[in-house]
Length: 133
Length: 65
Image (cartoon, rainbow over all chains, first blue to last red; front, top):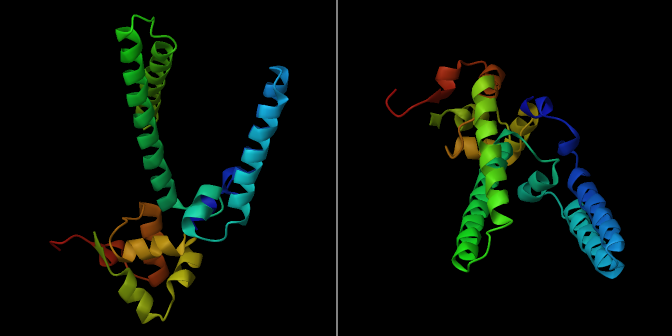
């Protein structure tokens, strides 16, 4: 009942494996363009193995939730919290890296740009959800 | 938040998996609700109450009531 409302491509067991494989292909193509296809092949192999692991890993709630086919409202909440913590960790890492670069007499690029993008995305998201909600 | 999900489920001799299937959520979600680790959304609370033929207030209540 509650799950059906949220059904979509991201709720298929093929979502994460397919995404991993396509990302691997993109890495291979980009590495090829950059003149080092061997590294791209490693990337494709690693991401394909990662996707296959999740496809064949069984029916545990965590695996099914991460894979897509076991997502319900509780897992969506877990996913949201985990994403927020990931964003916070990235933000802290960027601030530290930016400060270290400044202290070393460097320009602070590209950390300042990444921080600006993060801050802007946050403000736009707040404005959007405030308007919607 | 306290709830009567386990009691109502047991009364109908339902396994957690059966109730989860009927509600379209995972068995672990039903388990988390029963153990008061997860408070369900209003749509899921309504669905559970309708499924057992009780009101939401009869199914979910805080410590004081």
